[in-house]
Length: 96
Image (cartoon, rainbow, N blue to C red; front, side):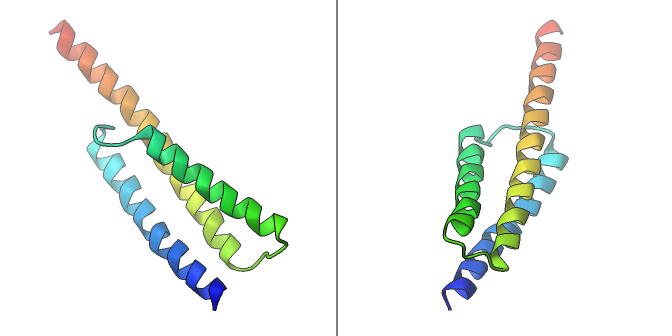
């Protein structure tokens, strides 16, 4: 039962990342996003993956952790891209 509840939690969190990625892609801005928050979430998921290996409790939930790490990583790269775009816009506005 514990694995099922953990999977439900991870799936619930995992649903939000593709939504965040699309919002980041469309908005082309990093305003309102926190790099620290994203990195902490990524660190947490990595610790969750490591806990599965350390406890030798490798189940299907590991696949959900891996999906979430991939999704958060994409969101992180979108945030880096958008931060760069924000800086470029600010430079153009300063020159104008």
